[in-house]
Image 1: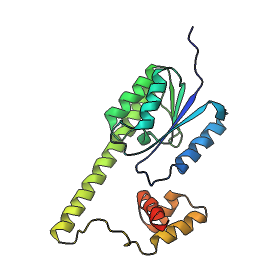
Image 2: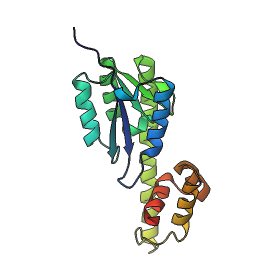
Image 3: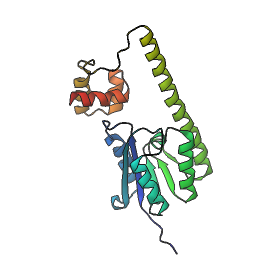
Image 4: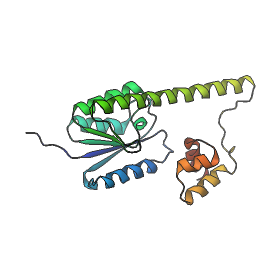
Length: 199
């Protein structure tokens, strides 16, 4: 009889190399501790690239470990960390559930194992894909208008003035990136860009 693995795979993804995965890791660690998971059975898989496709080094390594029967549970910060495309995300999720894996999103507080979980996953992945497409459409429209008016010069460094320093100051006070983004009226990605510029 094959040995049943109790290894927990924790998958983390940020969109760019400059972004920090610490926030996602902290939430996942909180869930692991709350559920009595021994840190010795936890394996971390971290990718720093877009969720538009599944060709990510750590994701592929995790898939190989799942195929080899070395993983019993997959824990993610949020379902869109798995994929920004509904088809890719559902394919992976269904394959894992068919193998008997437990799949958990800690911030959404959902266990995707079973039919109901997969239906919920399909809805959430659809929303993630729609958000991604809407964001790109807004960007494209804004750039097109700026180009037409002769105002578009691309992103230039040094145009944020004191914002990077303010972002770092708020981080040092213990604020999370999401809270800093809200305080400065910018996106979370912009907050991470401020961190890079300040350093």
